[in-house]
Length: 120
Image (spheres, helix red, strand yellow):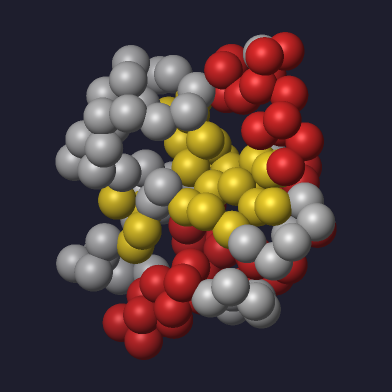
């Protein structure tokens, strides 16, 4: 998977609609993250959606729900945001690039702050 230095929009899943994590963000932030390549994908390894769906990864699937996917340069979908099903925890492989505009610099800082919160 090649997503190093590759900003991409977030492709929200059906689970994103009920996510406390995403609901805690201002609506214009979630919309902009979905419609513009604002999430800085700067890694070469990640969890492919096909791997998440494999039977041997049932425990991962039982613990986390996928909120968003991103596409690598080669078009492979990988998980960019996931959220625990029963505890207040979220993980994001994408962080907003501070050089890009997602509404305001304060909004970018707020998104990073939300990513670090254990409870929302």
